[in-house]
Image (cartoon, rainbow, N blue to C red; front, top):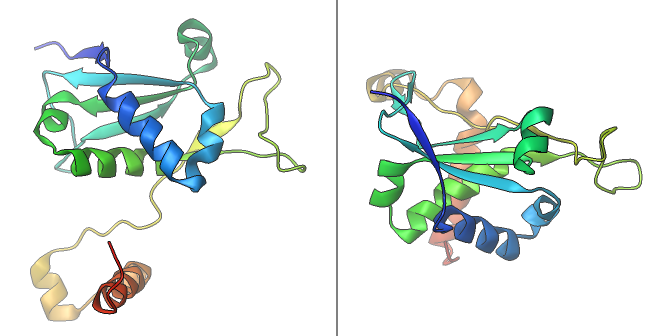
Length: 164
């Protein structure tokens, strides 16, 4: 079966992105980028046995010229349709966190020689892949301690009555 992609013509992804950018000051700089929203149809994609729900891609200079966009957010259609509004928001939030817009010495958005916004796609700063039995037997490996401190702080906030 051929892998097909389709633009988000109903602006479902776009609506979530726009709302997140408006509601989160950390994403304000993303307003300088132009987004292309697509769905992956048919065949699911897996990496290390895990379903890839969405991918954020830096478009090449040629693609940026052709599509007049800078960044592509591609969501696996079947997964998107099964998610509720909060789950969709979380998925897109994680994709937006991957986009790092470069700034110059004056803290202005940096531009390349073609006057396009300079940015890069970054990997998540916490990734935990471990077997439950391994965790039970040996505890959390030291490289996962930052993740544990984030989770503990979040749990402490919930116990103190803070909102999610």
